Length: 324
Ligand SMILES: Cc1ncc(C[n+]2csc(CCOP(=O)(O)OP(=O)(O)O)c2C)c(N)n1
Ligand SMILES: [Mg+2]
Image (cartoon, rainbow, N blue to C red):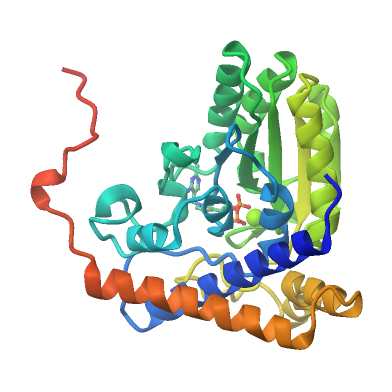
């Protein structure tokens, strides 16, 4: 799909919203208003908007623990998502899910529920792709995982089967070169993880995950390939993690220089500048987007804190399967 100015504006707004949500959640934790665990997705906005923009009702995502935009872009409401983060009964997961976006799902929006086991959802995405193929549906599955996830055995099983069966899956490898404190240099002999695709018989491509239009272009090729029955693609998106791994990580293992280099590639700032330079938006329109995002987030926070309730202990077994 050729993108119009209107599309660029929408993409920029999603990116701003994603950035401000991550910042707000981090602040809520620091203020003690939210408890549990949080893996900030500051810096990953272009990966998510570039891959999810334009997905349709037939499509599915398997989110990772990093960032909320894929869920929101699939139609999960911000109030509902944030209330889940607040462990409120009215939220995603009904208040019974430990905070952290890899645990949530909403099948009504085709967001496949996650797991805390890194990489374990890669074969789940393959399974969803198999389901689509067997039912002769037209959807594709986007599977999100990090470079750490790509080093687990699940990666091999998931990619091997998806390629063998030509399943409609796009494996979105969100490479920030770290698995908590372990750098990619320490955990693999490769520098480009997309090269692994060749070993499975599928295309593999590496893009600058800080440039939304670059991600979009390659994601669209991979999605079109998957939809036409030609099979999966491994799409490696290079991005920089702006924070520690999680809110409880002091990030002492990276140098200031490394952080500063990464932050020069700010996906939101870069795309904002491009949009202003091409006159897609004016500075005033940008400020209006920032204001709108803030308002949307503040309203969701107010809803969670003032209108939502704690989960009922009697509800604890709802949805838990019995082997009985
Ligand atoms: C099997 C497994 N091992 C270890 C962990 C602990 N853990 C949680 S997140 C994470 C790092 C994941 O790194 P990556 O996949 O690169 O994603 P990123 O956090 O960098 O976005 C680890 C090791 C886990 N959850 N599951
Ligand atoms: Mg990583």
